Amino acid sequence: MRKEDKDILRKYLPEGAVDSISSDIVRYKIAFRISRPRATKLGDYRAGMRGLPHRISVNQNLNPYSFLITFVHELAHLIVFERFGRKVMPHGIEWKQTYHLLMQPYFENNIFPDDLKKVLIRSVQHAKATDGSDVELTRVLKSYNQQQADPNEVELTRIADGSYFKIADGRVFQKLHVQRKRFKCACLASKRLYLFSPIAGVKSVSDEEMKDFLNFIKLNKTTRR
Ligand SMILES: [Zn+2]
Image (cartoon, rainbow, N blue to C red; front, side, top):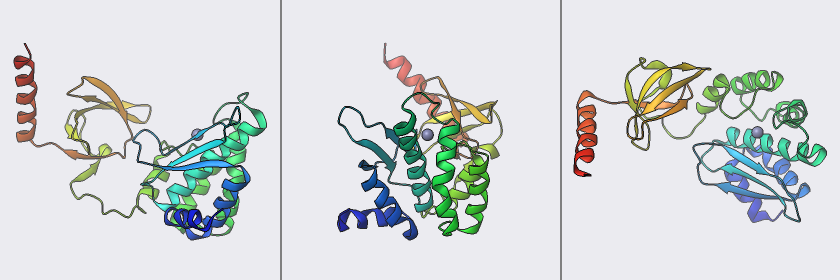
């Protein structure tokens, strides 16, 4: 790998992981892309077929540990695809074993801080997915984010059912109830239902803002005729 490319990786990964990830990219001929932040996923893998290389992308806004874990998650998909094609489940036993194996050197070389290592080992042993559904892991990972947490932001789990909240893009939701460890919430503008992680960072909406918002909706409904 060219030195310039390696230097780019160095900005995103823990120092102790740069060499091994560079070798993986070369060894598996991965077309690797650092992607703009996507709300729906941390990274993805697309199988190399018909002469195209394997493609892996990881979101650019992840902290170094999260970036590494996401890369390894996707690399495990690649290795499973090379061995089994599409004959096995995406996060089945073959993927779990591969992911487990790939993570070992990072545990042995103490790439992760102790608190993170502890929950991560537990997560890997129980072979949970690293896509944000493991709440404990996500919470510890989040504590390593560089950006200062917004003081007005609270975890969704800490606000009462039925109350209104807004997210970073300004959309307003009502928190409804728990469904399979996630919270069902209704988007007021689109009247659609969404499932949120219990630790999603949200901001509360004041009564004043709520009144404004409802007026806005009413106004737009009447002027559209
Ligand atoms: Zn996956």
